[in-house]
Image (tube, rainbow, N blue to C red):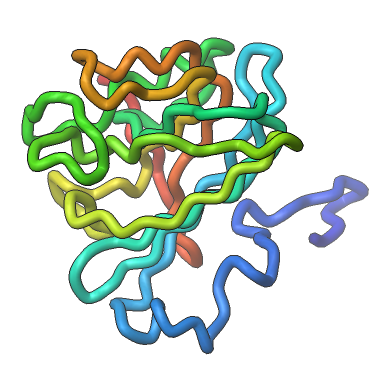
Length: 189
């Protein structure tokens, strides 16, 4: 943080020290590219937290740490647009689905690239999730998620209902930004 003509200026990429450490074995085995999304509440909800994406040699590790949830299960997805401006999250568009697949779970043979199943919040409303996706990348191209949004939903994703798993309202949203670089959000044209 620095002062500029009496105005406090914060760096857009100011992150907790734990977000990336040089000794992180996942980073060492991968490409070194790391992206983050700072999840903020939508529509009067309290969902906040951080989602980290680490490019591995074969896939992307996704680590989510979300608080302020109601205890229970909540759908968790990457959506097509990096726009969290609408109070109901509708500006983020639908699930990220560059290959036109049906909705499914993270382990389904066919699913949207942005389908990551559910977060399980404990009694205090805290949820942690770690998985590896082979459907996305942190590079430019059809499978790239930089500039898109992470969305947390109010209900469980049933992993089968079309087109989006019947996961209820969008209660948290964050734009995925490449760490250490300027990222332009992907918006609806």
